Every structure is written in structure tokens, then in C-alpha cells.
Length: 88
Image: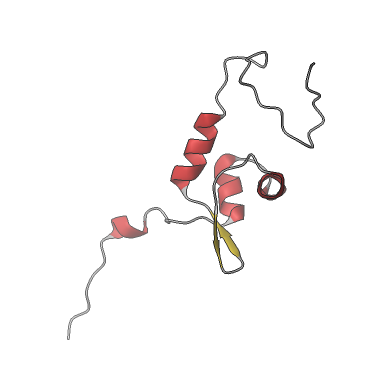
């Protein structure tokens, strides 16, 4: 009996990344991702039991949504809990 051979393309990119892999992909600290999950404002994620998983598509969408021309841009976010104060 012959075994089916899986194409290598299916294993090229994992569909779901762990928090550590997602942080490495974004080049940020895993603790920063954890803080975003708690406070909000981070990329979308999925819970599979107790495990947190991210998709590359969601990580890319999140980084695109955080694209600004300059810090004076009116759309520049103020994150709760950050040290940056919002000007009145």
C-alpha cells in the first residue's frame, strides 16, 4: 500500500501562530502582545482551549491599520494605560 505524499506548499506557512511566533513576526515583545490582549487595541486572535493563536492575515491587517504619516496625525491612537498623555 502506498502512502499519499503531501505537497510541500501546505507546510510552508503555518495557518496559526503561537503568541511567541506572532511576536517574532511583528518584532515586538510577547509581553506587548499579552498586554494588547488584556487592554485591547492589538491584533485579532483566537483561543483554542487555553492556547492563543494568531493568523498572519490578522497580524498584517493590524499593522496596516496602524500606519500613520506622523505622530501629529489626528488618527494617531491613544492607548489606555500608556505613558503618553492625550492633549486636551
